[in-house]
Amino acid sequence: MTITHVLIPHHGRSVHATLYLPEATAPVPAVLMSHGYNGCGTDFDHGARYLAENGVAALCYTFCGGSTRDISGFPTTEMTLFTEREDALALTDYLRGHGAVDASRVYLFGASMGGMVSVLAAQERPEDIAGLALLFPALCIPDNWNERFPRVEDIPETVDFWGMLLGRGFFLALREMDVFARMPEFTKPVIILQGDEDPVVRMADSQRAASLYPQAELVVYPGEGHGFSARADADVFRRLLALVKG
Image (tube, rainbow, N blue to C red):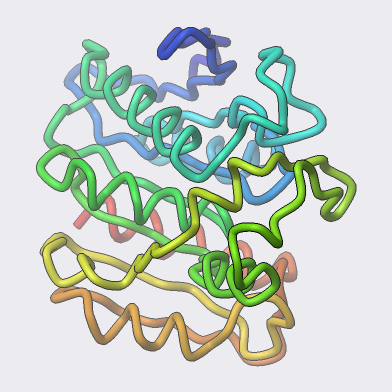
């Protein structure tokens, strides 16, 4: 396995990422691994190593402005779901253009808000994404914030949420958003992995998504919340590997 730090410039900013590349003589499938709200690129180091040890490339990264640990210089107050989608698509392009990667087998894996961003990226570029693995995807984000700020004039300039400062643009970008509307258009394989005791992400949203995607499987983990035990986490990456290996 080769582990390399890479810097991906796009839209006037640069994403810091780490590429985990297996030893191989032919192009390999790859997974783009997107962290959750205020997470960082090292969150899935263990999963990325597991994939690379089993013949699958993995790219972990920190969203620009998506974490208090981000070092890109992009302010958290300028981050939105759409700037994060831009990050994800730029890294998808990087993987598809890498000589060691099979461009037809690039998958997106995302946890919580990273799952939501992965859904948006796949809707934007379905032809470039071979499949999705969504770990307790936060599909509830638009509803949650639009309920909190029912009118545009209710939205403040900044909100300190879970230790990270968000700007007004984050909430404006959620107005009129329906993340479910285009799910039937994505015909590639999808797995959704959800704990039945998750206090953040609604089971109903994951069930709805699973019913809308033409090729979807919902895996429910009894007793798991928003963040899995080591045992459930290991199962997630086994299932991810199985998805990618087909």
